[in-house]
Length: 274
Image (tube, rainbow, N blue to C red; front, side, top):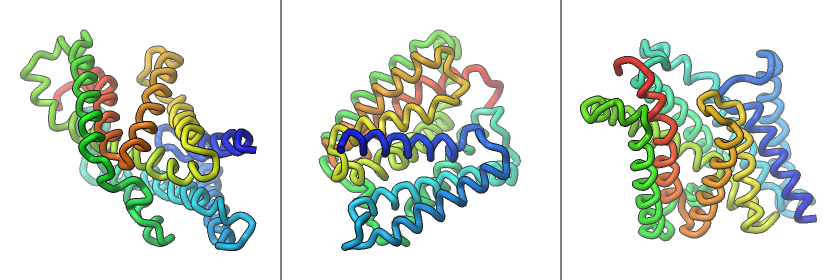
């Protein structure tokens, strides 16, 4: 039964992220809108129906997580580009990419927090808490520093020179901090604590890791997609373990930000002036 539930939750998570993640729409416009609205109605209704004493009550926190994820992702999808246009920016410069990520992450995180408040959930239930803060920050800082060194050793990044790297540093920091906090909240902070009572600790880590990895199948920046997905899955398992170990998302977010440097620095190096 637990294995079947793990497979079912993983499939549901992947379906939601595949259809509502803010990379590239995989459905026609009308179907995209219908899917988002349908998910919100279905999971909102299931959350409401699954009150204490009802047959589905043990899954109520999971229904909330799906509802909150779709709400946050839909806000990011519909409004991030509009905000960028109002600011007169495009995603063809480091400034535009960084601001786009900040706006997108703010909308997604804001949507999740709003859903939590409406549904009576606390920030602590999303792993927004200190937990074993020093352990998390320590592991995250060491891993992030190692990944920073690996990022700087990439040929395209080395060719930039110190002056160019320093000019890009603020936009790099904005991007990796925004993306890491958003994705750790969205994929793990929102789901780990709600999956664990249903399928167990390690199955929760694996399930959320698979959903996170498969949701990145549509990326265009990876030269070798299979290698990228394998590495991404390995990272996601480490981030899930660290979040469980520390009871907080801060360490895994710091670790995640370091991993994002491996991607964003070469991308920025290929662009023109900031």
